[in-house]
Image (tube, rainbow, N blue to C red):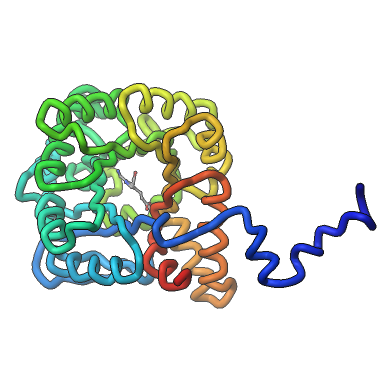
Length: 323
Ligand code: PBG
């Protein structure tokens, strides 16, 4: 029965009624904080394009984790910014590399913090591509070996979860196989299944110093126009042993998150990327939008679309707002 019998506003009249019928919840335990780790000691330097985000040396990242846990954030994902880069991305699978050392320090100081590592080569290659370059192209199968080595060194250091973000074919299977071979059968994999070749990664590349020196990433990351292809990517990752599948970026790809939710019973992750964060911060700095309201609305929308967990630079701040 329609108006006047049905009045949708009845259940919107009071805050208590609105709280009662809210369909989507957003809580600190849904959020993962990305952290940039740099070499050196007592370093805490701000990332200009990402107001409120710092790059931390290892001792500082341990201190930051104390604050994150106090705020209710239970998981972090680490990105390394090494002091040296080369064509083989040696820093990525160096047992004394910046991420490996940060994982050890974090797990020692905060045993119940879930430490996830981003497994990719782009921060470690001299040319900034996500794999080994041969004849001007990223060679898929050689890259798989380097990625598997990287995942093993993270797991050896104590990482709770590894998250390959390179978009090579077969990487989930390669990483799963190697983890199982080398005593890490219990280490879960979050697959960056649908990682789009997005303009929204700009600020991250400043923070991680990972802008490709030539060309772009369209030869391995996905075309933003394709959603059916995203489902094929995720299907393959599930078959290869992924424990969670991710959509990245988040807000411009809510339809993909929703399709993942409908298609798969695995937990779904979404990555609210650097550009999404920087846009909100820049508009807020100009007084054009309310930072808190816009951030919480965006995060709620990502949850509503079907994400179980959200990787977001707002994690710590949002946890404060939500408590
Ligand atoms: C790299 C990686 C990227 C991001 C996460 N892992 C960047 C890229 O592909 O250039 C982007 C994250 C962000 O923008 O916040 N493997």
